[in-house]
Image 1 (cartoon, helix red, strand yellow):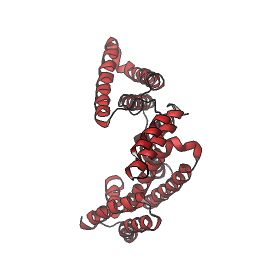
Image 2: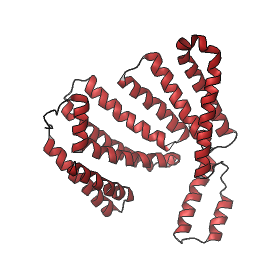
Image 3: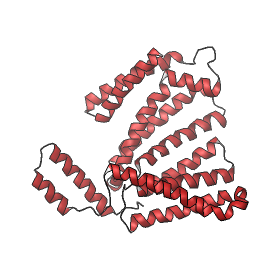
Image 4: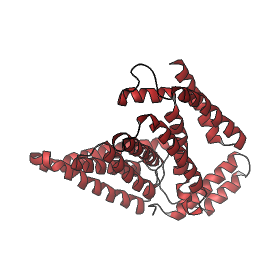
Length: 297
C-alpha cells in the first residue's frame, strides 16, 4: 500500500518518540544514541532548507523537461498537449517510484516535487479531456489526492483529500440536488464533525500507524472547517459571492451563525482543557482571533 519501507517508517516513529522523551528529560543522551543505533532509518531525509531547495530545483527541472519534451509537437500542440500532459504525468510517477524504492528518498524535496507535479499534470490532463465542471473536477481531485495520500502518506495531500470531499458535497448540494442553499453550511458542519470522529477512530488502528500524521492534520482541518462553515462572516460572504442571497445585508439563520461564531471557539478551548487535548486548545485559541475579526468587521 504505502511506497516507503515499512521497517524504516517504524524505526522513524521510535526515533521521534525517543527524541521527544530525551527533550523532556525522560532518557539520557546515551540512551537516545543507543536507540537510534538499534533502530536505524535508511531514508534520505535532509534538513528543511535543503528540502526546500531540492523541491524548487526539481520543479524547475520538471518544467524545463516538459518544455523540451513538447518541442517536437509544437506544430500540433493545440491538439496534442492534453495527451502530452498525461504521458508526462505517468513518466513523472515512474521516476517518483524509482527514487523512493531505489534511492530511499523520504521527504527529501525531490519526492515532494515529483508527487505534486504528477498529481497536477494528471488532474489537468484528465480535466481538460473531459471538459469537466466543478463537481467533476472536485471528484477528480479527491480521487487523485486520495491515491497519493495512501501511497505516499503526504500530509498536505491528505488535506486536499478532505477539502475536495467538502467541495464535492458543496457542489452536489448546490448544483445537482436542488436542496435549499440555506442548509449547506449545516451539511458541511456535519461532514466536518463526521470526518473528525472518523480520523480519531483511524488513529487508534495499529495497521494504519504510518498515516497517523495525515489523520492528525485532517483532524485539525476538520475542526477549522467546522468553525468556518458556521462562521457568520464566512457564510455571508460565500452567499454574497455565489448565491446573491444576502444582497440586503440579511442572512438566513443569521442569529444561529452568530451563536456558532462566538460559542465554537469557547467550546474548543473548554474541550482542550478538559481532555488535555493540545489540538483543541490551540485551534480554539486561533479561532478566538477569528471570532474577534468577525465581530469587528
